[in-house]
Length: 411
Length: 168
Image (cartoon, rainbow over all chains, first blue to last red; front, side, top):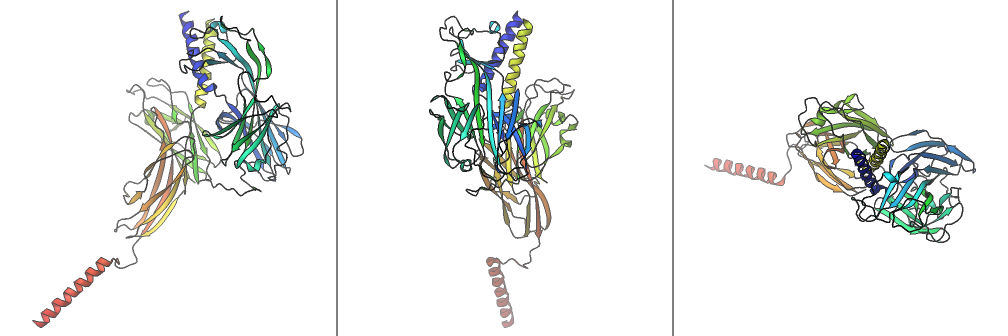
């Protein structure tokens, strides 16, 4: 029984910690290399999920995509692969005109529960706690919960994404609906993205939702975001004043604005709760990716010269966990992404004061770190599995400091 | 019952791990050019510029240095600096060889960024292969006005001495 309590408290702590991130829900969107492509090009279609227009991984659970070609014909885009960042597909752009790429991601069901201020040690002012999937309410420790705790929402998230590609750089037709259940429609010319005010319309099954129901947000990066509330026609204007790529997303304006479902007064709640019950149904969100035109811009000339070398390493630190002398850690993945214009030769350098990492770090199981090198073609990435083998005679203890530098050189 | 509790714990922990791993930042760097060639005469000094950029969405600190420390006549205008997200900076490399230096020299200009948060940190760095050719100067004597003035003064003193010696 004592063990049970420990597990429940542990589970609660994990969930509470999780919710800090979940409070800002993942978005799912489509990425392509450019909106203007050459006739006959193979277009790489990537779906990712993350925050602030920074992909963090392939969307989990149910993912699918569909292509609408210039003739209006629809074909499914089959998954061609998956890596640490993306769900991949591709198609050959062999017709002149506009292609629309439509994505659909059905995520795991989530519970949003009002547990009251002070119910979460990590965020004392935040009164909600989130739980994924099936929850056994009798087993949850509700010690710190308010007497009127109740389920606010129990929803399955449906995330619709859209992107455009044109083989003649003509984007006539992007202001039409392509039949997504929840859809963001760019009403202004997508070629002018990033040059000022841009009007969008959000439609649910072809019709606008009630005034004030939907908020749209334009995100260029973590620091550059703008939002507006849609009116009774589903329209809102965002001041997209900064050049670059933009992700437009929708969210409901508040907890009473969900529409696809109904309130259920039989959901679990505390003794003091007297409200109408929680909302049970589906949570629909949409995302539209608009890229700054990089080729054949008929409106204005843009050119961004990539540096010869530009690469990123993810993550910024490695935690191999608690190990004993003689142990080998679980592998930790490091992703090297080459976004420059040259192919790169990557080597590494490990420094520490205790010899733990410099004597025990291995790459892809077989290679000691200083024997390892790899090339990363421009526009591609490479994933490495790192593992730490603690020498049998290692005498140090406690947290061990060290550094690993990934060195890139153009080849 | 215990199994259920255990499974809740494991699922929650997995969620937590998934979410926490998805919040990690990347550490990146952009550099131009990808190699440097310099041809100079001894007594001469030249400079080359490199551009360092921060492609990430977090501020980063950068260090620039020459890999071969024995070449002490390569100086960096800004050996340490910070860049905000998507910011870039031009750094000047000064090549001022000693007067006796002649020949071919190879080194690498290293630019590195690292975010130290304790534990085992990852950094990204770029090495720019740098080839320097130092040729012997084609000018027989350095045309420094002070040296010329000293030579003329010396010649005058010699002439005066000679003329006095003849008179005596």
